[in-house]
Structures are given as structure tokens and as C-alpha cells.
Image 1 (tube, rainbow, N blue to C red):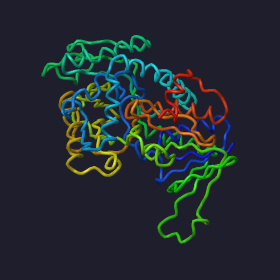
Image 2 (cartoon, rainbow, N blue to C red):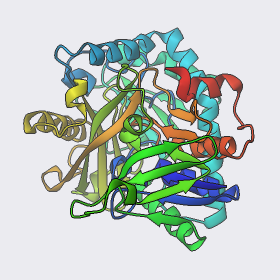
Image 3 (cartoon, helix red, strand yellow):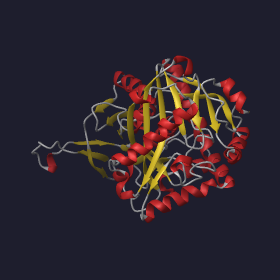
Image 4 (tube, helix red, strand yellow):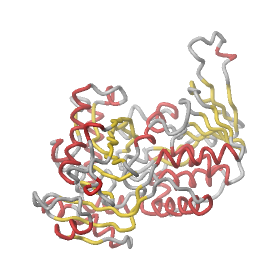
Length: 430
């Protein structure tokens, strides 16, 4: 089959990889000049999300204050945005959280296998690092995390709950003063360079004959019974009529366009189910080698991840929740400064002296987050249209397992997931 993939981030490129591996002819359409330029560019933290990493659950946004939650909330009187946060907040209930993560876990394992296959097949080095330490300032926060710790036990995830002095021994860059409650060590959890892997896969796909159309904006989708097509937007100086505009046709379309996915697929902006969350990243030079962490340190409650990438430290998190009308617009300088200050404070609190924050490169971008915390993956009501999106800010490797699901569905095969997980991540659940 001929398949078009819209989106050159990790979700789109992983989908193209799995489709090509399944024997399909693939064309990737990307609006930027190269891949990994949107949300993928700023990805950091966990490769795959443990119960401690997901952006929902008992410890996520338990406080409405940014200094306690690590998130900036400025929804104003927007009822849809407030309803979204209310629905996400229902997952702070430990039982609801455990049930929801249990639905996600099979996709985590499928993603692990998909990534392992890619690594074994091509021996790629995309700056993988092993080991992650989640730290907690207050005892009540560690108590709130108990539901996540129980899930680690339930699913056999290697972990150790540590006292403060054990945390310092596991990662000497963490200071023992001021006092903190303790932490959870995930010795096998990994971080890696998401944009680097995306570019490496793109090069492999090009060599294998996958077509890439860069600098192409999608104007609309054309869906018919026997065929599907993408109409590409004309350049500003293009004088052709709409009938003469570039059209690429195929047997199936996969939309993996991140925060732009709802607008392309349609039908979601009227409901508070998918939110374009603006998240932030600082990439700073290592200031003092002896103070730099050798494993990833995560302020677990604030969801601020501090990862070593060669001679750089990448600090990510600090989501901004605004009204739906403002969410996908550039953030005003005051709000952006608050978000980056949260990241800078995170490094000061947990790895002081490790990063030259004053020399950091800042990035912000949109990541699609669902109200139930799960990705949106699978077939739509139209038999030729599929989606791979909304993997959220934590665990970018989920896009790789989701890509395998989409490739199976396009091929007419049954994905290697339980039926309840397929339904839980399905496009039509909202």
C-alpha cells in the first residue's frame, strides 16, 4: 500500500519506519526543512514512562501553586480548559490512577520491544544513559507516591526506595542539605536524545527509499472510499489556483503531527479532551564536572527531569496551562520567564553547581496531552485515516510502540496489545 505520514517528529518517523518494515511504500510530509523540529526537539527525561513519570496521578498538580506543582496555571475563565484540568485531576485518586496506568503498561512494554529491535538491528548510538533517581522533598509527597511505587512492584519494574543518605550515595550531586524525604531509584530506566534518534531513523529511511517532502504545509485532507489524499498549502508567492495545488494521494493517511493533529483530523477542538500543553527545556553546559549527575535526577512531584547529555545538562518540564484560545499561541514573556525560573530552581535545588544556567539555551513547544493521560493511537471512523499522537511530555519512546500499533492496523493485522488497551488509547474514545 501507499501510505502518507504527516509529521516529521519522533511519532511520524517511527510510524514511517514501522510502515516501511511492514512492506508499505511511505511518503513523509513535514512542514519544516528537516525532521525533529517541533516537540521532538525539546524532548528530555524518561525514554519510557514509569508510574512515577506520567503526567497524571496522585502527585501530579496536587497543589495549585506553581512553586509546589512545577506547573503554571492561567486558564482564566475558560470553562473548557478548567474542565480538562478537572478531568485530569480525577486521576489523582489512587485507584483511578492505578487502573489507568495498568491500561498504559502494555503499550510501554510494546514500545520497549520496538526500541530494542531498532537498537539491535542498527546499533544506533543516540546518547542513551541508564539510571534515574526520583527525589521527594516532603514526606507527604513520598506518601502520595505510594500508589506509583505499588505499580512498580506490580509490573516488576526494578526499583529501590531510598532514604536521603542512600539517595546521596546513589547520586552524589544531590545535596543532603536542605533535608528531604527520600527517593526512588530506577536503576534500569533510560534517557536518550530523542531528536538524534529521529534524525538517524530518517537517514536510514531515506537510504531505504522512503520519500520525504520537507517544507510542505498540509492545507487539507481528502478522504474517499477508495483513496485518500493530502492537499499541500501553496507558498505565499505561488499564483496557482487551488485546483492546481500540489496533491499527494495514497491508500491510507497517518496523522502524527503532534499538537496540530486535532486540527488536521477534526472533531476535537469542540471538546476538552486534548490540550496543547506548552512545556519548556533548558540545555546548559556542565559547570563543574564533579557536581554533574551521572544518572538522571527527577523532582518527582514537579515533573522536572535533569539529564546529562555528554557535556550538557538538559532540564525539562514546567508546563503552562492557559485557555484553549491562548494555548497554541506564543507565551507572553512573563509567563515564559516563570516557567524557565522553575527549571532553573530545580537545578539549584537538586544538582546545585552542576549547570551553567546563565549560558543555557531555552526552548518551549507544544505537546498534546489527553484528559485521561493516555496517547491517541489507532484508526478513525474513516477506514483510510489513522492517528499517532498525544504521547504527552513523559516517555517519548511511547511513540515507537504506538507506531507499531498503527502499522499493524494499516496492514490489517491485530496489534500485540490487549483489547482493553487498544480501546483505551483509541481515537474514538472521546
